[in-house]
Image (cartoon, rainbow, N blue to C red):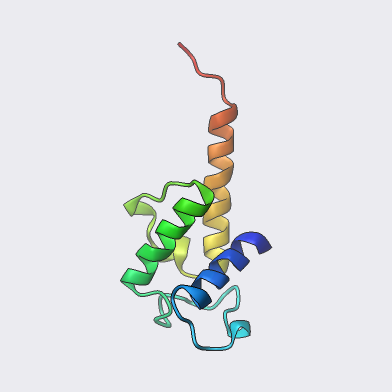
Length: 94
């Protein structure tokens, strides 16, 4: 969990310009509700996650349940990574 959370926390600070204390970006801070992730920030974050982690985030995935807090993002990304690993390890049928 820590790797994904730290990746997102660093992105918010460095790329989105979070000016508050890094410690205030807790795992359960409501990022969308508090205006930390606006629509442009959310798109930037999704692009960053796709580029860095090789996942695909569909439009229907862009909901607060998946991207609303660092904890939600971690759970969502972990699920995507696990699914991608399963897909790669599943033999193709002809």
